[in-house]
Length: 94
Image (cartoon, one colour):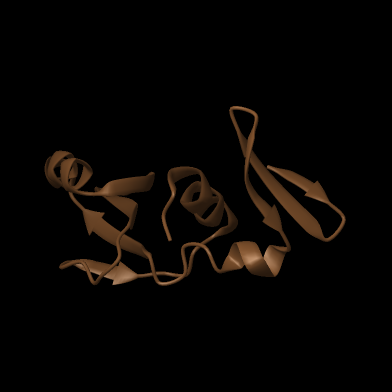
């Protein structure tokens, strides 16, 4: 990802996947990021059934951020971070 003044560019293998303003990038991944709080025993199932963005161990559980188009049982919808938006472009999530 490159920042040029008020424009952002996302490249993959030499191809331009996105070029636009931060506001335009913000539209990617809107209402598509969900977060689970699971035990380590549930992690394999969540990872097999979802497109995982991030894992974060906290205490005796794991917070798992995923892409999903609709409400996921057991997950709460969260605001996408910049990395989520970047990954949405790279992975083709709209």
